[in-house]
Image (cartoon, rainbow, N blue to C red; front, top):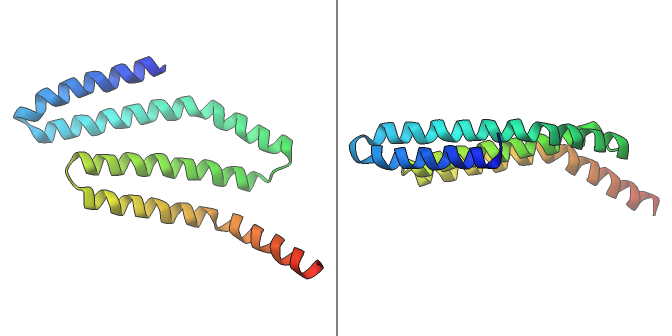
Length: 130
């Protein structure tokens, strides 16, 4: 699906949500979440070829596959965290959205630990050999 298709889904969903919100806020919220999921899935489907290309670029550059996986996982966590936090904010739960964002940041930090370990090992070897 192209960007125009995604924009069409978003605008059509928005129009229906605005109409539904007057009579039934729960259905409007459910439709908003469903539209968000559909759009996110379409975006992920579009991103898969780029991820494959990044993986082959990492391999040709001699970068460990582990580092590419960390990048891809981090992007995934970022997208999912943003989606969940936005859904929380849309339902009026900004405090819950902040907790979701904090959880996403912690998860990204956990994913990045192997990179920090590698950097620390390189720094330690430079210090001891220098």
